[in-house]
Amino acid sequence: MQTIPQDYQPAKDLLKNRTILVTGATDGIGEAAAHTFAAHGATVILLGRNVKKLEYVYDQMVEAGYPQPAIYPMDLEGATDADYAEMATMIENEFQTLDGLLHNAARLDALMPLEQYDLKMWARLLQVNLTAPFLMTRACLPLLRKSADASVIFTSSGVAHKGRAYWGAYAVTKAGCDNLMETLSDEVEANTAIRVNSIDPGRVRTKMRKKAFPGEDPMILPTPEEIMLPYLYLIGPDSKGQTGKIFSV
Ligand SMILES: NC(=O)c1ccc[n+]([C@@H]2O[C@H](COP(=O)([O-])OP(=O)(O)OC[C@H]3O[C@@H](n4cnc5c(N)ncnc54)[C@H](OP(=O)(O)O)[C@@H]3O)[C@@H](O)[C@H]2O)c1
Image 1 (tube, rainbow, N blue to C red):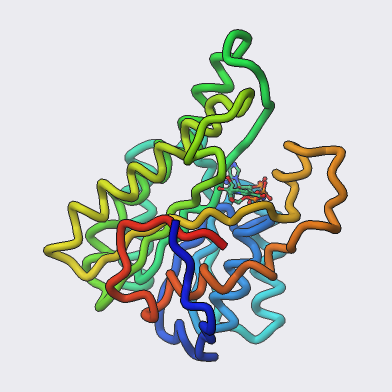
Image 2: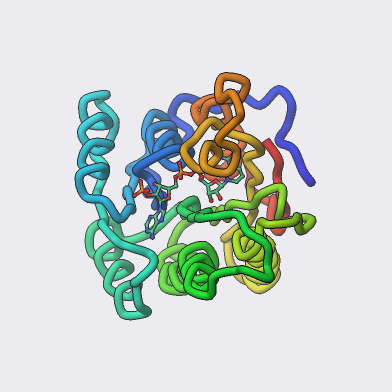
């Protein structure tokens, strides 16, 4: 597991003139990443399934005086190959290139033993957490290739590195994302300027964490805003040359 340089200080305009797509931008870590990237100059495409929540994040960002974001409503559970192709066409028409892609959206659903594992839930988690990032990356690769240096970030988890009782499909999808990251990194390293890495955010004060650990005092956990340095480092040009790695916060 990698960490970012200890004294890392992002420049205020680190992401100026960059277009970055953030999935799951309506809550938790994704919402914080969208704000943080925009505060450092990026034009952020906010992707989420809930239009009201997307509009709220959009309004907050406009109010803060950040570069005008864009909203792209999409439910990753039902999205098809054609939907991803349409999304890529929209990005190409509006922004020409894509400089960053943060695969952040995920579901956890319930923790349960494999013996009782619900098949519908298994399929849903694989779709949202693993197949969606694959299809989205595939659709966006031509746009990422057009960038002078593009960054793709997958989101890992502690249970990706070693399976744990009751974490079922969630853990499987996170391990799958890390493997997808390594495969893609290996495929594009030699012939593109695209770097591909994962971030394991650790324990963070969000709705997902609350769902997994309802009895835990959330105040002992860092907020999403407090863990943004690795996200900035990896999404921006300071991480040029870093690829195929899993970073911890
Ligand atoms: N929090 C932690 O301690 C922790 C630890 C390790 C890894 N992670 C990972 O970090 C990432 C962010 O987690 P979080 O804690 O910030 O979770 P969160 O607060 O539950 O936010 C998840 C985001 O994903 C979106 N999303 C879920 N299903 C979707 C779908 N079908 N289509 C589109 N968007 C969808 C949610 O949209 P809605 O707003 O509509 O629900 C929300 O914006 C995830 O990949 C998670 O696995 C988190």
